[in-house]
Amino acid sequence: MKIETRAVHSGDRKKAGPQIPVTTPIHTAASYFYDTTEQLDKVFGFEMPGYAYQRYDNPTNSALEEVLTSLEGGHGSLATASGMAALEIALRIATQTRPHVILAADALYGATIKLLHQVLEPLGFAVRFADFCDLAAVERAIAETRPGCLLLETISNPLLRVAPVDTIAQLARAAGAALVVDNTFATPLLVRPLELGAHFSVHSLTKYLSGHGDVLGGSVTCDAEHYDPLRAMGRVAGPLLGPFEAYLAMRGIKTFPLRMQRQCANAVRVAQWLAAHPRVERVFFPAGPAHPDAEVIRRLLPAGQFGAMVSFEIRGASRLDVFSFMDRLKMIVRATSLGDVHSMLLYPWMSSHRDVPPEQKARVGIRENLVRLSVGIEAPEDILSDLDHAIR
Ligand SMILES: *Cc1c(COP(=O)(O)O)cnc(C)c1O
Image 1 (tube, rainbow, N blue to C red):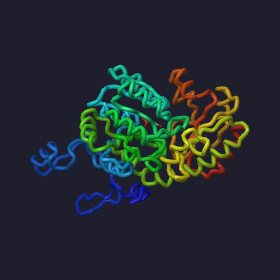
Image 2 (image 1 turned 120 degrees about the vertical axis):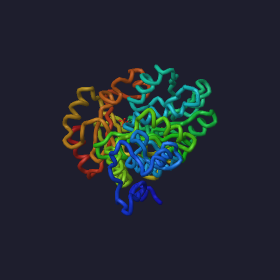
Image 3 (image 1 turned 90 degrees about the horizontal axis):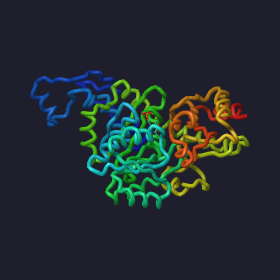
Image 4 (image 1 turned 180 degrees about the vertical axis):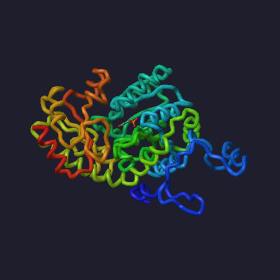
């Protein structure tokens, strides 16, 4: 079945007695018991399928995990309380039986850089960075650092570079390292990293998959080799997404392919319009033959779909000029996050990359006049007209 169909049907309609609920209910019970204690004993001993305690799993969360596994084409998933919790547990499982050396793409979500420096380095992890769009640099870095794990974002934040996940997966495998891919920006509509050889695909469910700006969540989908250890760590470390959030995420996922298609189409229009605007210095959008990753984009992304993020530099704008531009926006929401039904604009210098050291910002090319637009599902004319009067 196609992804649009799986998004609507997977995980739902589990028999509960003689009746079958059309959608998965919110199961809030903290624990479960059975007719006989022998049955509960078997559930605890993994000899019989069933639920025992909400930290291990619960039916609402399991249904969400089932649809995520189906969308990502993986072996199994763990739905977590946030995208960051998902990244942390994925990196720990990836390196559980491998060297505690993480080779990361140098363009990453700001909190991910902090996770590496503030959480994992103090625990003894060595963290190195490389330009993952430069294969020779990745090969060199692998030879030099002998990593246990590689980490990249399918479409990087905020400059929207597209790394060759398939080739990097081969390099990682040849070096005995695991590949963790943060697939939040691309979504499984555009790229399914496990099908390209990655071991883990991680999401902030908060973004496109839930899509309505009303839930925080994350997910890890992985291959058969890593699923049991992932589940086991989930049971004791306790990052599981609660049933209310799991319900909202699952409700959002049903329309995710439809929303994403519309958002991708809107983004193409917005990127073209911005590129022709005299007040816009540069547009970052992963399309067109002039893009530095054009060949990878042609190979990995579906024709005509380039994601729904558009970053751009306002010509000659200082920090205060960017603030006034943002304050003039009437419809586009000036808030952090992305992937929602409504268009949102964020200033990386102020928010996502605020604490990224200036040298690293300079190295990856994040300038003071750069803003990042998450294109929503609105009528494209309304998005353009809001940008037009604000940009002046
Ligand atoms: C938002 C985001 C995260 C973190 O997800 P949360 O749900 O906010 O914890 C990680 N990676 C990327 C690319 C993101 O956009």
